[in-house]
Length: 194
Image 1 (tube, rainbow, N blue to C red):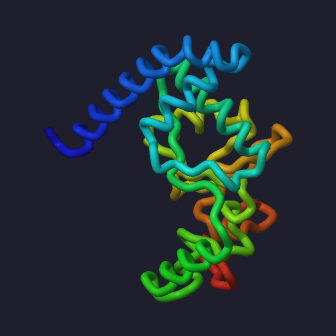
Image 2 (image 1 turned 30 degrees about the vertical axis):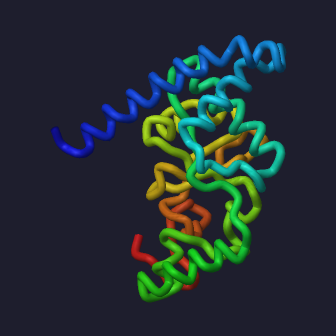
């Protein structure tokens, strides 16, 4: 069995176990918070599945949108939504950008994957890097209901909270600057071919 197939199988097993755990935790959650028992049971089960997850630093509305989305994903469709990265301090974002500049050789090429702190939605507390891939697919399909949108073609995991009900235009990569016809023209001053 190839590695990708094994990973999908493992993810399905984790999803089944996590949903089952949420069901078992539901009566306790109901006793604790009757009006929000499903959300609480979901949060407990997902905390056990993704113990290193850190939701602090997200704006209150981005956090509420993500909590609602992941609760619906789990209870309605049996899908798990975990967070690999949410809010980042400016110093952390700068370090990531600097590392990518060193790795790729220039700030223009680094911007294909990482933005500097002043431009990063992670620093603003509205960006969410989600996992697993099935959860990201679910969020891409249903995220507009929660004002959560995938914003880059090259990052299946990156979503942003964008209230207002109007989906943002998806960019090919983080540093893309679009012209009036929404064609990527340049990144950080470097002109791209059409």
